[in-house]
Image 1: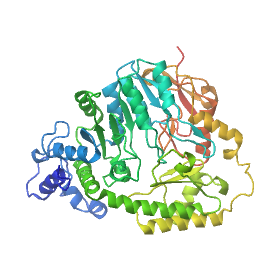
Image 2: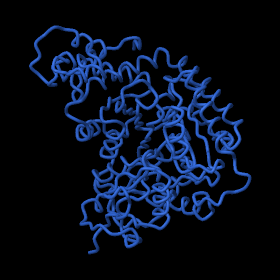
Image 3: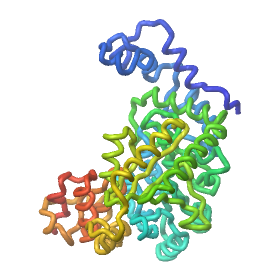
Image 4: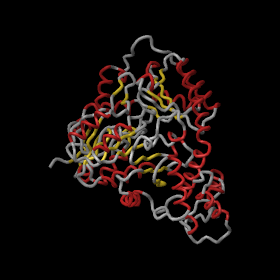
Amino acid sequence: MDQSTTPLVDALKHCANRPNAAFHTPGHKRGQGITHRHRDLFGNAVFRADLPELPDLDNLFAPEGVILQAQQLAAAAFGAKQTWFLTNGSTCGIEAAILATCGPGDKIIVSRNAHSSVISGLILSGAVPIYVSPPYSREWNMPTGIIEPISIAHQLQAHPDTQAVLIVSPTYEGLSSYVGTIAELAHRNNIPLIVDEAHAPHFAFHPGLPPSALAQGADIAIQSTHKVLSAFTQAAMMHVQGDRIDRQRLSQALQLTQSTSPSYLLLGSLDAARHQMATHGNALLQKTFQLAKRASLALQKLPGIRVLRPSLERPDFHGDCTRLTINVAKLDLTGFEADDILHTQHGVTAELPTLHNLTFIISIGNTARDIERLIHAVTTLCQAYQPLAKATSFSFYSDAMCQLLHQALSNQSESCLSPRQAFFAPKVSLPLQQAMGQICGETICPYPPGIPVLRPGERITAGAIAYLQATLTAGGIITGCSDPKLKTILVVEAC
């Protein structure tokens, strides 16, 4: 296929510039109804391209024209047999993948570091999760996200009626699981492997990156094209290969989880992002590698800063070098405090602050000037907060707190109800201490990264509560809960 073409972009441009009287949505009528406030921020052109499903622009849910052509080009570029454009982010793709492979009561093996959208998919489908936990790194006080194949094998042996396996690879920090081996295990049991590959739409375009999930045998890969490529925020793709997925059912599931009024701005940006990577991706990523290496080497020299280097953590491991994670614990700062200082005082904003670490995404959109600004900002931070000569008594880094963090993030809490059963069960709000040991009735997670610590249907543990309280105290944000201050928790009412 000719990857230099952009069928959807071209059709959208033609319709945007065609003079006609619009008696269809949206109400601003190609920008004629906007105010100067719209115009000052967004300009005029974006409104002209904000169009509905006109005859020239095809239909996302029954594509036969330019959307179909754009999706076929994307499939060829990313290594899939079929690709769907998503306008509700990876979230709708993950939900649809679960709906397409599991029904009420079906078992699905799920990595415990899965995004909250997986819980939504479990609630919608009625599937029952069989969790596997990634190893925990005490040195970095975080789960590595690397799902060991032996963990999957054990669960497949214990639950031979499992219908699918779903893992996250790579993580926010760029750590990937052994997708190929896990795919072999799943296929040996004649079930599909679903990979939440939200952070890896770039893997297919440079040999210096880990192989993509599709290249390693995954049946479904869901990618957030907007996270590291040039699509608009919320624009994503779902890729499928092989014959283990009922594609008609998958298409029906996507109609349940996506808007019936998809944004053509998002769809067009997916076509343009595919074109960019298919024609110039290797060169763009090579430049990105050089910027990431410059930042990593410079920050490694700073006192009090540790840089995560996956190849040192696991000699057999191949990580994403465009992700830069640093630990600031030796500066007696939390990641949230360091993030606030860098953002407000130096104009440098991280993607992910946590209790101990900061993760920066270095992408094709970054410049050498950005990297120098990052290096200068972190250098200044180290000068202002001298490294501690000995271990701090700061509670976040005490042995007791690290143990609680470990328990929370690799939580093996008893699952009493499925997420769907817990969602529909009668609930009552209890004060935090009274909620301990009760069955959780809501999804509670720090955001970002949006990985639940408390899940509906599981018992509430002391480790999970301690971790969430520590996150709030340190300046983090908790989402998904009815009480964002975490004074109370919704629990399933006793029968």
